[in-house]
Image 1 (cartoon, rainbow, N blue to C red):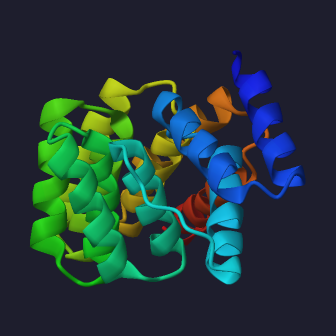
Image 2: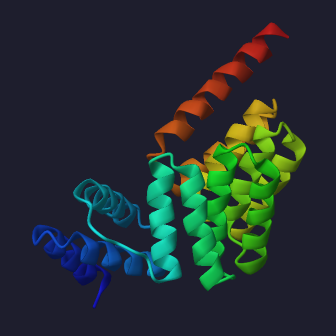
Image 3: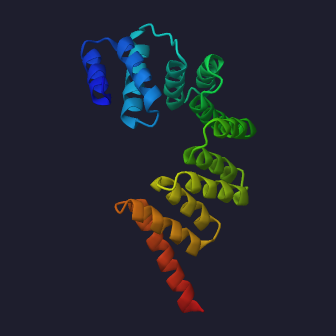
Length: 217
């Protein structure tokens, strides 16, 4: 079945009130594309309906545990979400997305060292720009700006076509006072996505700031 056909099957199962079956199909689809936001939203909807209706759903695969953990994370059940991510990792110790999502929950619990450790392990298994970007965010929270910028650079080197990574790099450069470097990153983000409104707004703010600095010299 194609991705479109699988999404249609999920919709049909929902229409038939077969929420646990639809949830399993969502988690299987998640394995093929963890970034599919439409699928994640569908899963969250189903998870909440199953909880409200007291349906039974017990994950069996790493992907199903991760998806249930993600649903709990969005419901701010951080400790419970970690339980599911650990279940996923017990079944597949190389499940890098389980490590990444566990890092998110650990971050919200203030366990930054553990979150950094999870992301480093995820990167060892599957280095992606997103994971480096997540790591840079943690170091930014810890006010270790030099390290944060280092990981931003690694993020765009690994995933140069990811618009959001260029934008995030620009944001941190601007926070650190490197306005001209930040504008370069915003320009790249806009080049990749001309309608990137946040990047356009931030770039214009920098342009105006640099103009004021020039005229006050």
